[in-house]
Picture 1 (cartoon, helix red, strand yellow):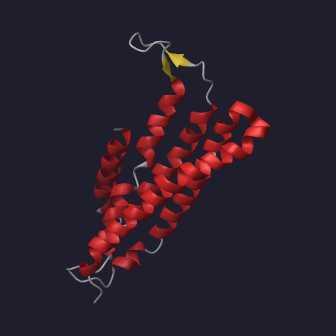
Picture 2 (cartoon, one colour; picture 1 turned 90 degrees about the vertical axis):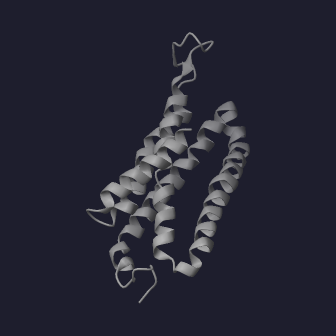
Picture 3 (cartoon, helix red, strand yellow; picture 1 turned 90 degrees about the horizontal axis):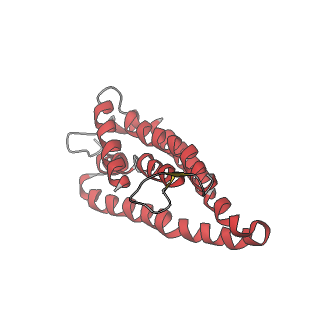
Length: 173
């Protein structure tokens, strides 16, 4: 649910700001990823015993989970602009394949490799950090988020030129 809200908000912000400057469609994901960094850092490092008192939840609501929800919202700001740019910059005859490839790569890297890397790091760090190894393993995600922000920002640098020379169908002229 939080990711769905983030996808909607990222697309909405990119659509609104696109009118001012086409680069906003890549700046929105950049901002989302940068906003994620402190939240993704707080999530595993926040003390387990810090809880918000909710009568419906035995023992209270974990504050760390709040950071995770917020990170999920900001972290998914990239999805709608990424698919929009994939469609907008691909030749008409290749748009479906380009969108499928972009979605597949995003899923393979994020949902496929991400958990494997975190799990592998956890096993490697466990002899040194014991039960806290998972906290430090999850911090590896922060590095990938920073790399992602740099990539989105890098894509914004050429976006104006990428759209010049396109005809009304989106094909290169």
